[in-house]
Image (cartoon, rainbow, N blue to C red):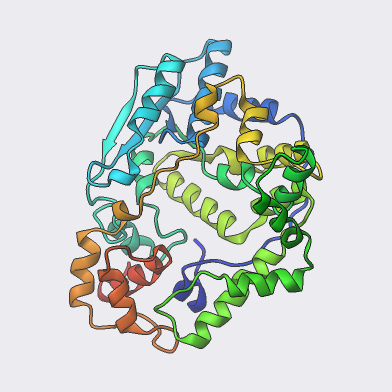
Length: 374
């Protein structure tokens, strides 16, 4: 398992890229089918299904392939958060299931089990210590149902199919002037040299209020350097997402946890072969946006309204629950590097109505100081 360095723990992020050569690429759909076919022979074969575009496309592709090959259908597994209204996707889920003719489904109800200090996470922390990513509990709970088989997820879809640096220019060139005026303002930003893009990223940066100012600035520079590193070429930009250390290390961690449970964990849209195929298809200009990408690659799998939806579930209020608040109320500041972190500001963050997700590693590190792993 990867060991986070002190700055990565404090900032809640793993910066940088591992420059890897892009493998030979085939047709995105054929590559995806080849990947899925290998796993559809496993039992159980579960597909993490939220109702979002990525999980819906993955389920639809797996179901279509299983029917063509006369294999058992994969089973969608859905996490339901009754206490987090912003995460409700029930209507979209039913829309997809009805379209696919799927009735066999697993629904796991979530209350406070997925808290970073909840009953799913803490035994793993005791065994392995601090892990990246810290929010492993939801996936671990689904993997528990897939023992002996495989859990397929659509993780990585946002990056592989989402907006690229060149997208504003692509919209202007391919939309023949029928774009909002704001898009024209975005084109110079996309074409700007790396130094200017780093300055812009620093100005508009995400701020971590629990860090000392000099540390916050140092981590912001790392974030800005990552943003400025993305290529203008859409295909290369797509492949760069697959080489980010945060994504690669996180995938390796979840696969290792799955192996401990006799489960193969697969992020279909983060698999190098799939990312490379989409990157090659994108070429220099890519598509005009996420919706155009989904329509081009998967337009035959799902209804248009599903592929074109613009809403997205939010899970912040479903992550930090009473376990976090109870720990934060009695926490004495032990377990974090006070040269990097303002402990009082960190506690205030954990006790707020919307704690910052990147403070999760610090939360678990502080908990481990009181409950050492073995």
